[in-house]
Length: 282
Image 1 (cartoon, helix red, strand yellow):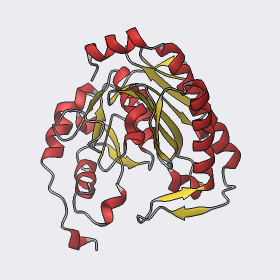
Image 2 (cartoon, one colour):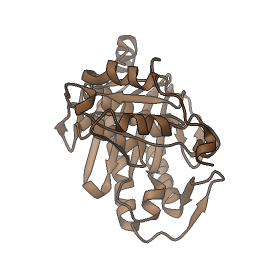
Image 3 (spheres, helix red, strand yellow):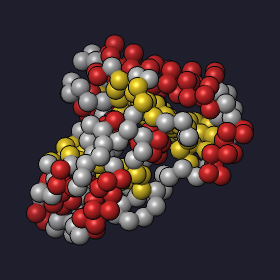
């Protein structure tokens, strides 16, 4: 995924080391607020789609991070899950997911995090993801590698798909569309050691980067779900693409992230799957 032209442009124009530290600090602001409020949520409401929730904690984290970023980088635009876009003069944009895994968090299920990605001309260049309950902070900067709590990361090296553990997720529009990867989930469960469903895309991507899982695919995602995770996986030596066969596009809503060892086989298997008939589960 690394584009040499983009790498040269951002290195010449921006202090990437400083911006990476700002991203990490932002993710830690999220961590502190999420842990402080864990199992103490005051309000939970729907954003309109079935299963798409927002809590008072999502909003508190987002506001704190936006205030921090606006102070530290006043010229950089912001695209945040709950409050939308704030356009500034720079070609850079912060992508904020204050609480990835809101449904998990609202139920006291400890799989959630905060994701902060920085994109340049629609290209992820650095990011940070905090996973509070595990006390893990993932980060990466283009050309400089990926880290978890300052330990350098590498993706796993399975020999084939049969020996791999995968993870996926299901979009909020799964209730309306047959293109919901239910069939892919079932099919790949039989082709691997198993498929997990964590419920937080950013954390899933961080786990690919760290080798906890060997691959991840999902559809129906937003920019803030994947901006940080995409560069973290890529800098850990992983493959980032659309699926089953297209190039990575931050705005497509689809992503495949995996070890290079299983990329070809995983894409081939995904391409074989036909969505289940909607009448089977409605």
